[in-house]
Amino acid sequence: MDNVKQIAGEFSRVLRDWLTPEQMESVISRNRREPDKNVCHSHDYCDANEAMIAAFRQAVGREIWMPSDWEDGRCTEEEHDADFQVWNTAWTAALDSEFNLED
Image (cartoon, rainbow, N blue to C red):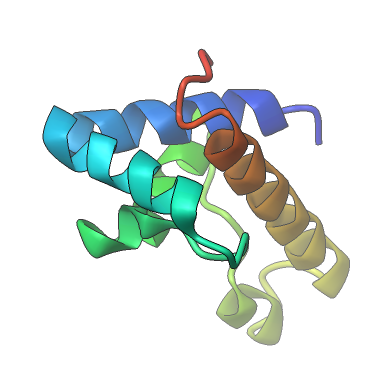
């Protein structure tokens, strides 16, 4: 999927819309000090998974395939896996840019 940068930019925009400037500064500061690069402190202030779901929907034009979609036959396992690979790559891109990507 070619939308990784677009999703990452939209995710960054959603977080900046949902959080105050002070909260965003805290997220970025905490992320800089966080030794575990799989942790994002945006979760300290909101359900960042919901922010990513909103970003995915906006960028791709559909809902992300969740495990229940695959289990219930609404998508294939490969489609589900592909969506979550894009999710993880976009999340990392947004985090690495300190949420300054433009979509």
